[in-house]
Length: 193
Image (cartoon, rainbow, N blue to C red; front, top):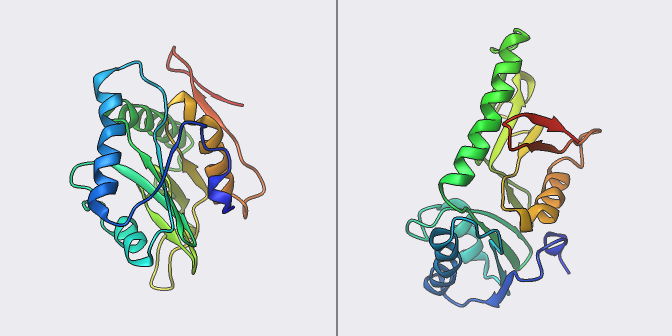
């Protein structure tokens, strides 16, 4: 079993899809659950088995291929995982954390020495990975020599997705000595756990 299947929620939708239009239909069904119920915190994952390389490339490189459905995508071999983005709550949470980090870095006088990379995609021969936001200090900025893996990755999701998001962050940080988990509390305070 590919490592990207580790820690998926038990209600993750797992299917073989022959055509992208069927992926879009199933993804739309999941997204509608979030739109219809603001308190819904269930499954946001769609697992694609026996994924053809062409479909993996399209999902990885063309974020408009699901026509209005926002997602993050990772794949390993012939297995892919779509993490469907549950709308404005996702963006508010991610951007709120970014603002707090930016304020701290500005107070430390480091505002010129880092960059946020958004949902940048990282790829090796048989695996692709994408976080919600990536952070890189100056020495890791993209150059003509390639794209270095980021120093910090922000993965945002609903509460049911927490084990998978922690696992995803660990994949990004296998090369980094320290991995922290940050939580935004209801008061708006950020704590390092």
